[in-house]
Amino acid sequence: MADRVSRSGSLDAINDIETARKRLDRVAARLRYAERGYSGFFDAVKVDEAALGRVYDLDLSLVDAVEAVRAAADAARAAGASDAHTSLAAVTSAVDRLDERLREREAILGGFS
Image (tube, rainbow, N blue to C red; front, side, top):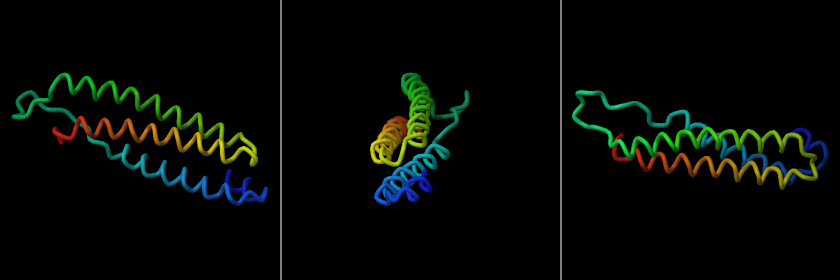
């Protein structure tokens, strides 16, 4: 997309592309290294079942949020250079929603890490 936008002379959109890319890279790294695991049967610390249920629900919502980012990125890729700002704003918004879900998950697991 960056090549198409720069060839069309719409260099202002390059900043939008870089903003979306940097946010996506940051969230992808946090997702890649997210807390995971379980408490064994004989471990001293037991996981609260309600918290585990909330984490499970958030994990399912993360799948939907990742799909929303993919769909927004596909739409941005298909959009013309004249629509670059709007389509990239949609990508950034989808990445921000994914980031918020990941923060919620980290907050729940904060006491268990």
